[in-house]
Image (cartoon, rainbow, N blue to C red; front, side):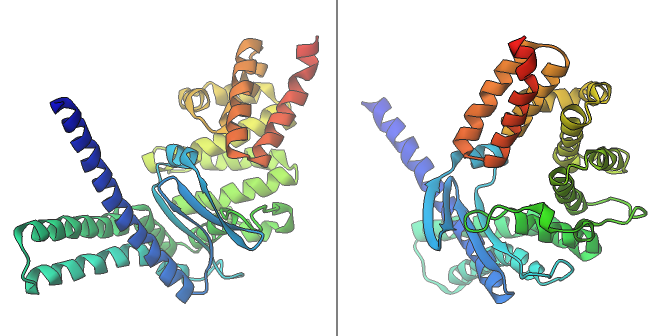
Length: 339
């Protein structure tokens, strides 16, 4: 009986802590929403933990999206689209700044209550607890967190601002979420050859340009993008590694599937961190690329293993783009499997 009560108490404590954290995350995301509306942004979708709300056919819908949390480790998101044509604008800084600012305002309100209020020991402890969480979220988010990084990069680099603009634009969910990069020109994503790539947001701009080149089937230019990033001075930085791997995988995809340059593909795949990413990451695209690589390496058993995994994940996410990758893979390996 004692063990059951102890277990129940632990569950209750963790549930209350989780509920409190969700409350502070909701305050943070509401701050983004308020300042986003003030600067002309349009709401795309909202996430709290695994709960996702988005608009489809003009109506708000809800679904559970635990796969997103597992893959990104993000626990909250208020995704808003910048006003059209403001890729060079500073107005999104208020939208990004609003989340941490609302956490800070909450902390100051709680501090005022502590100073002027006549509270009991339990209530005072609860207020102090929430004050600490609010202040921590505000400081961490606006200094070492993603929002602070976005603001710093955007203030220093117009190229970074454009990268952030396109990230918000292409990352929307629901109505109008299918972006065709064929509709955009090279100028929309252009980075001068003499510009030194230093920031994550600048790499993001190159990522969207890579997506454009993929749709236009200009695979040789994708490989050029890969070499530019691989040879930049940010390669060793930890925060950049996921994006750098993304470029390496895109280049790998271009080499194998479209340029049929298997020697170059093997050269990229020979890098230890590329192999690790392909063999352990749960993203559909990575599973497909792992299958491609084992096709190049003539390992049919692993091709089938990764292809099966890719189909499972694509069905879970219902991602049409990644299903297209799977179809291309199946068409590529069909002759060898039939033979």
